[in-house]
Image (cartoon, rainbow, N blue to C red):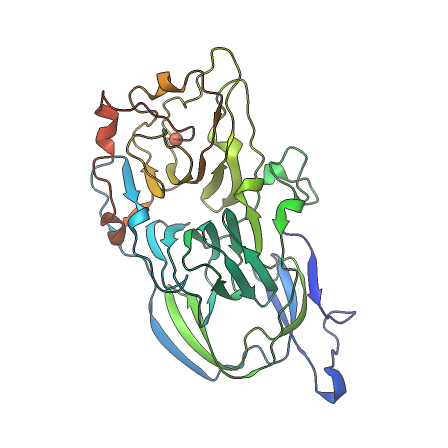
Length: 396
Ligand SMILES: [Fe+2]
């Protein structure tokens, strides 16, 4: 999905002299690439030497602490009640994770007053509530509700909130976050049958270049720890760049849902892929149109996949006992499907207004000790309830 983009001033040929005006010396070129010069990359031109760091300190570990899963069962978590406060990075709490991906929530109430760089993972911030600007070396990206903000490894960024609060569902992976290969042609272009096109990808359009001197803090996440770097210059000192590596945004409301005569499986909703997981978007859409169709899903044993759903908006007539901002985990090892009465209740329904993000992992997810505080322990028992409002959710 990444495509070539450039902003600002760059020399005609790479790796050549690029002079500052009025004899100010050379701009400093940085090749920033993934997979050791074999993956996507960008070339950046800085005012200051990129390795120039005044002070370094270790701030502490950043490894999630996992609890024993216990007996295999379906789990649900009430993320609406997660405490709010702090800046977006500091407010992030990881709830689930394995070696391929971590899933967390962030409810910040203020902008960042430092810069951040995750050197060990891609990050994808699904903006459920709030708005603001992602400032990075690559320029500014304005974001708002529904935006998936995708930030590659190594990007130095700072999030500014223009709302008093925000709520993000955050995915972090030590792999790329990109479009599934089946959406792309041999040239990397999104195909006609893909559920979105390049027009829906928002890329930095305005470069912000600072040549200020002074102390600036950058927190670097790598080796499962946070290092603090104090620079003697502004970290967003790029005068120009070009390449394929940069942050971008895709809004969930730009996802073009597919519908069919009969219930279509979750891959129909796939938005991105990473190593060992897929991310799907469930958006408002029409239901199946076969006269005998059942809009609710069939029971399924996703034998090799743990399924996580973040319920963002809509009528969760869906799952019984599920509220806005809840997260369910349907692990492999036991089947799941509509709760009692839900299949019948879905018959004849014409459309859904649900909005949800699903992450299916191909290896089991662990639950953090912190997530246990927000668990809805009665969730597994919901399949035993014969009374109550019948409900269904098309993904679950
Ligand atoms: Fe499912």
